[in-house]
Image 1 (tube, one colour):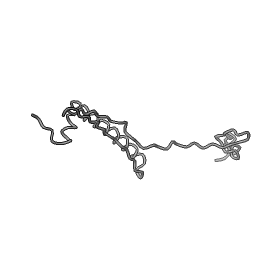
Image 2 (cartoon, one colour; image 1 turned 180 degrees about the vertical axis):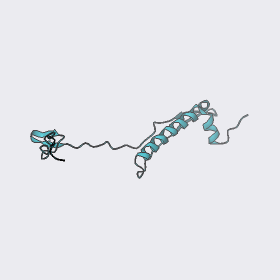
Image 3 (cartoon, helix red, strand yellow; image 1 turned 90 degrees about the vertical axis):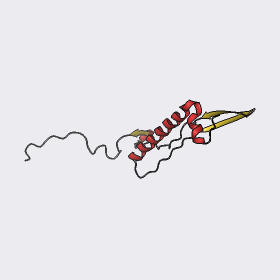
Image 4 (tube, one colour; image 1 turned 60 degrees about the vertical axis):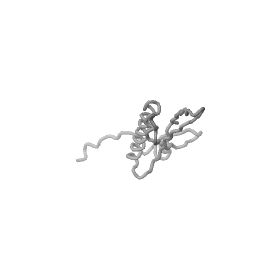
Length: 114
């Protein structure tokens, strides 16, 4: 009779080892994503979460174990902002309303100047 003496052994055997591989893959993916985020903004702490749920049912001394790996939780990232100016009639402009005449276009080159 083979006796399972610890949770580590049990988790490695569940679903013929496929559960262990899936958890490893999820952990790696979450860590890679958090590292990418951290590299972009090193002074910010990013957190994620991976969960494993084991549903146990026992009947006549036999246990059935059904595992569930909910989708990992990653930080919600703020979206980039865009800036426009509101002009007459509630329309939007990409140019500051008081500066659009500042650069009317290309100027003639003064060739007499050295």
